[in-house]
Length: 242
Image (cartoon, rainbow, N blue to C red; front, side):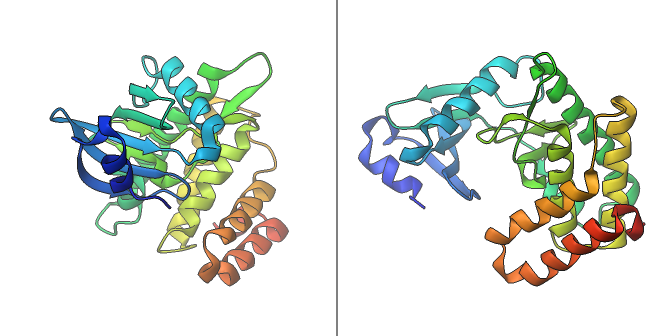
């Protein structure tokens, strides 16, 4: 992973940015910076990710005025950089996994999250095809007085259940993992989306099981537990744990 300091030192236009915080990213270099005293998020894509940069840029430019997603401040194709406005809020992963957050509040956030997905899917829908987020994890959402979605480089045409199951796998596999409360929160998310759009979420057990297995490439230390629960959900069904 490249360091943001490399971009700052080697590209003249970024010499004067002030790096406030380096943010977590599996593939690209992402940082909270200030540019001309304004807070921004700078995302520096690796050279082979020009296509993903274009996808994220297109998604945001089309939807920023209608949906709760950040807006683009600058697109720098030459250096593979996207600069977006910074959303001041709390990461959904931290809220959901904080034992000081009440279960009632967590359930409320699941309902708001289902509405965010519903709005996103409907906005980008083309005929019978749905654009999905494609990387629906808790860390890709921020809560202010509403839910904001981030990180659209993996967005694509797909099945809606992939987004919902992906989020369920994120909820279940973040610490504390696979607790009864986590399964209840997933049920709230699924039920809330189903109320908004009956019939869209199909084969959710298989999709959650698959999404858990996908995490092993990034979470080798948790492989045994991820495989165990993936198998149980596929064989017994999600409802078994409620």
